[in-house]
Length: 196
Image (tube, rainbow, N blue to C red; front, side, top):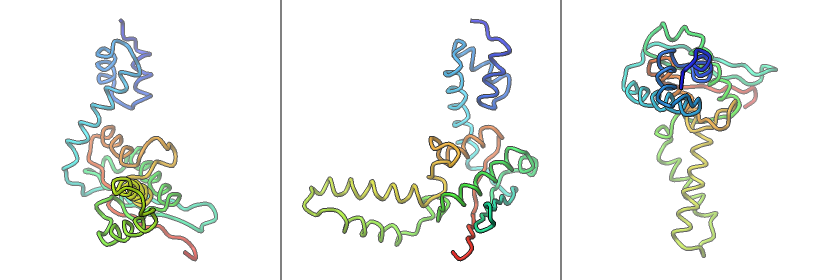
């Protein structure tokens, strides 16, 4: 099948990948746009994994103030170079993350940041809520499910993105790493609410 410029353009708009990468993905996928997009996504995930260990000393503070000025958020988003920090994509990501923090109210950035005593307290609370007459394996599965839900709600990187519930914040960051070509890390955030 012949790969046309319009096919490449459509795939570029869909994925943000480069022209040559789009052409190669379309050739590999035999012109199937969906399959080509999936190939580019997989390639991006592999590239992002390689970049995850790189040092990030640049970046910016993203902010969002909700209408009425009653709630706001600041987020420190780091990358490898000042060049990437000045791009519209990076700045847009920082703003989206600040908006996410205002709307979804996370407490921690990542699961590793949750203190062990908080996890132990949540586990004890969930264990007390479960009917002790249930089999032990069922009780553990229920507690495991409730703990996973708690972590999803409490950790920014685990939350579904407010603009697209099918994407988690960690996947949004991975896509940005693949697109911008640098490691990107959410360092910290603050959420401020009047009277809160």
